[in-house]
Amino acid sequence: MPSPYKFEKQINIFLWGFMEKTIIDKAGCIIHDTRVMTLAVSDNDVPWSSPVYFVFHDNRFYFFSNENSRHIQTAENRKIISASIFKDSDQMDLIFGFQMSGKLEKISKKALYLTIVKKYVAKFSFLKQIFGPGIIENKDFFLEKFKSHLYCFHPDIVFLSDNSKTTDKRLKIDLSKIA
Image 1 (cartoon, rainbow, N blue to C red):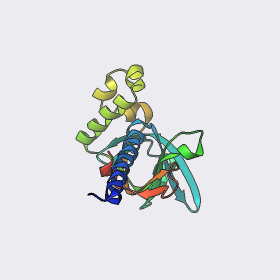
Image 2 (image 1 turned 60 degrees about the vertical axis):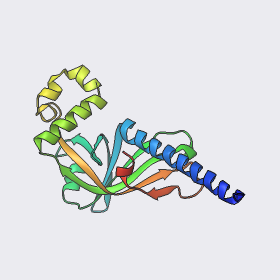
Image 3 (image 1 turned 30 degrees about the vertical axis):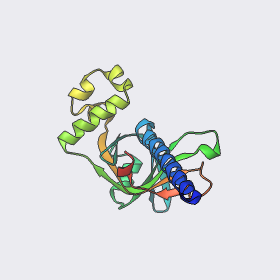
Image 4 (image 1 turned 30 degrees about the horizontal axis):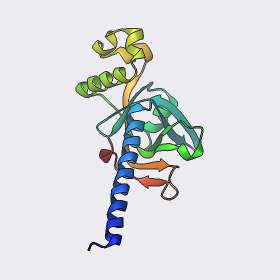
């Protein structure tokens, strides 16, 4: 006769797997559905944060920004910056998202640039509605229209914050397991 403890343990493992899948699904939704990522830099003990529209591709976060903006200028000479992406919520126990640290790089590879622009325009469809198909066809569109270059935030450390949990509200994760 099987031990009731063994059966209970199997149920708990099943439920833990279900909860993990739910958390992974929620995390995937945050990455793909959230529009704004906040970058944070600091220069001479003066912190600065900047919200940017982003797309996620190949475990990296891509965004357009002016090369003279404060966050880009400060990040150029820094080895590590931070970023966060969170679901907006009116309830403290529903705060859910990512806290990250990593490096910033300017993207110059044409093939990657075109891939990201297509994803960016698909996610932010209002751009194509306003500016037409030239936004994808003209490789210099963002530079000409917004004086913006494509940048990539490559996270080295990622924490998933989940205030709905009673313990372990903040866990170090591997983005490749989520997206």
